Image (cartoon, rainbow, N blue to C red; front, side, top):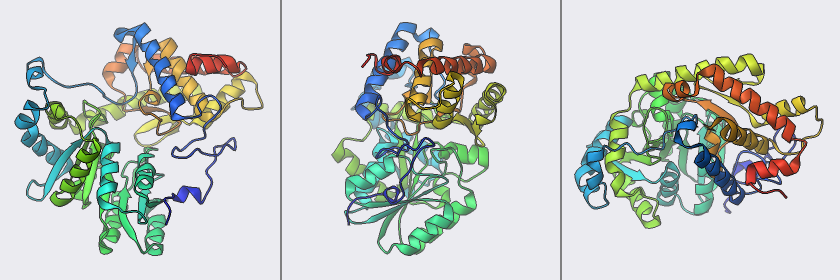
Amino acid sequence: MSATSSMSAETKRDRFGNEWAAGVPYARGAILSSTEDDFKKMQVAWSHIRRRGAEQTFNFSGLEHGLPLEPEELPIASDFLAPALYFDEFQTAALSHMGGDCEYHDAALFNRITGATLATHLALVEAGDVVVGVSASYSHPSVPRASARVGATLIDTRGIDQFGAALAREPDVALVVLTRLAVTYEILPHEQIAAIVQMAHARKIPVYLDDAGGARVGPAVFDQPKALELGVDVAATGLDKYGTQGPRLGVLVGEKELVAAIRARGFELGVEARPLFYPAATRSLAESTPERVRELVAVTQTVADALKVRIGSRLHETEVIAELLADDILELSMERADLQEAPIVPYEASAALAMLLLRDAGVISVHFVGLPPGTSALMFKFISPEALGKFGGAESYAAAIDEALDKLAELLRQPDALRELLLGVAA
């Protein structure tokens, strides 16, 4: 059986009729046609950050990519000393954070959740196997990439009904990848999660929980159990997401034998985290609190309220975030420009809006986090009160977005100017 994804059976298109590109949930355009172009775009973004400096740059990505170390800890931040002094403490903090038990569970640190996902597939899946993904919308792009890398077929499902149908239809499922809080920030209800785990285990299929932000949002906002308390076999979360302080690392926890095998694949591939990060990872886990998660959600709601006044019903909201979908960004800017034909794809419109916000207002959005970005939407999520206060409050942020939309409308008539905005060079 060849490596495929269920997405290939049903062509995905954006609202303008553009077909989604391979490996990402959006269509590529003539300007940002590849991950190579995304990196060039990132270099342009860095030039704006460099020009503005730290005091005039504001992190509204909803993610923390810092290094929470105290000055006195720097001398032991080495690959030799840090793991010897901190691994046991890291393991205890990780299992507590994720609802594990040191008698049955173990923990491993990866360079990113993507690394943990890839290593999990390589340890548990073989070429020709089937992997079933299940979430409230769709799995993160790292899941189809990992499945393809091992030569497996991914069937990505939405909700328990589609999951049950896929499981009944496929005789050779090697792994279930469950996402509690989807890329679209829709949550799977606890009842569905419990039923999905039970159905998989009835077939003796291991369940990997991609719990990137859900590890904290699920318990703090939706009163759900911690990751391993859901009964899954292994689970991974990120240290940069929603109530943690960074760095951008992936923590994998689960049954001891499974974690040992997955950790080994990680070391063999070089996707493990450098051991010098154990002290920072330990602090990030130990100091995370549900109260901080709820505070970030509440602050984000103030931004959403201010945006709705200016943008209206086009602002899409879930229970924890707000977002401008890329299709709506392009439609809004076309309306303001009085254009009937779209000169770019929605993903490029979203990228241009993000670049304008960074260039002119110093706003770092989630668009400038991933390469390639995992979504084309401009998200307003888990905004810290410190960043919002430094910027001037929710009204100031909403005004900056509104102004950037006006500037994008002007640029839609200037293809060379759009290319220069995003890539630093005209055609």
